[in-house]
Length: 159
Ligand code: FES
Image 1 (cartoon, rainbow, N blue to C red):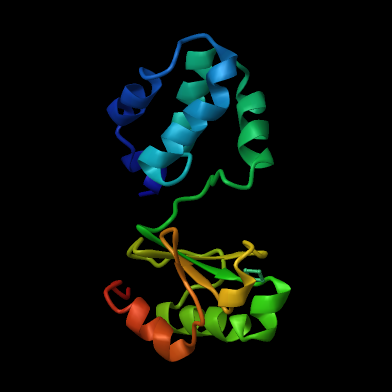
Image 2: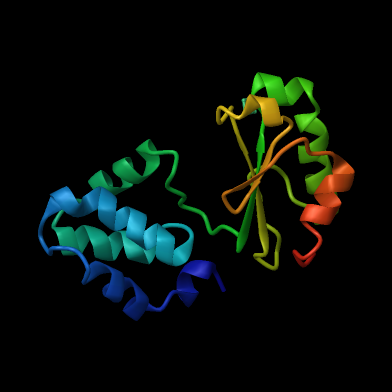
């Protein structure tokens, strides 16, 4: 069964109801709220949102793919983002992504089968002095090493 089939339409409807119906100007805010609810934008939510706002599905999809902050694939409960900007790269960011990939058996951009962790990268968030930098669920962890990673990620279930 795919994740999209497990989405409860009532959860979508509750998010839609917080926005004015038939107003395409609410599109970006609505997508943000849907993503906050599901951690990504499920296909069913996209279809319902298009119909609710009275915009073509294609337009909604174009907006969702234009902004990097929107995700069309299911993401994990926790998001580990490794900065791969130049300063972090030279201080060892590749070791961090390799370590997480190996420990959790996921590639960059991948999510563990148990939906606990998604591994992502970002290109410089302006905190270069902290490099190499891991951002875990929005919280910055600087001067990372594989050993520190193990401590930081120890509560996240493997699988
Ligand atoms: S290169 Fe990582 S924060 Fe700037």
